[in-house]
Image (cartoon, rainbow, N blue to C red; front, side):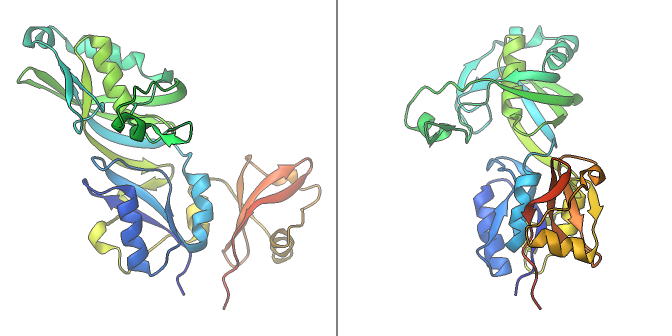
Length: 297
């Protein structure tokens, strides 16, 4: 029997997130595998997978903030806002040469903090039930509504100039739903020379780090985080007694106990160290918003 757990995988370029899920299903011998946040085929890095009952935790992980390293190429924009698309416009060498590091820093500052971001037209966002990228591929013009996102860090690591372009290596901390391709596009647009993404690597999802991930060739027998360990990385923990764990698993409330919660969502851990579920307040009571299936045997 496959134990529930959270698996951290370092996705290589050229594979879709679904490809990684399919390989994990084969490696673990189960169909019940899901992921907490897609990475484009071009992108590499941390993919958080849930196995068996731990898939219930993915909804609490997908909204976590994230860290990326990326390379933005200034001097051209593309149909997809990344290197996978065709170049739409190319700035002249003189226009690129006129852009200063101070102007780039100013453009980055304008894209830092709470911003309204228009996602890339080739995103997976659904428009009238159909993915935006499918509509673009069908020849439709897709304009998505702006979304409020937060970019808490947008720092330049290195900058290189040559062949009529400026390549800027950056590190970005951002809220869930932020598109790094859109940051590249908007930085280039603000500078008047166009921009797109040439490399993207996700290094962190909430409390999960790329340094703990396994390679795609090492899935078979890879260690996983228990549901309790994983939940503790994304939310506060509340230790509950055996009697409280039993009541929660049976759908009962813990009456007049809401003051014990330190956040809107808290992981309940029983005396054996198992995750009972995710708790929330209901008035003065505590109830389970999600219960983990009990492991038999």
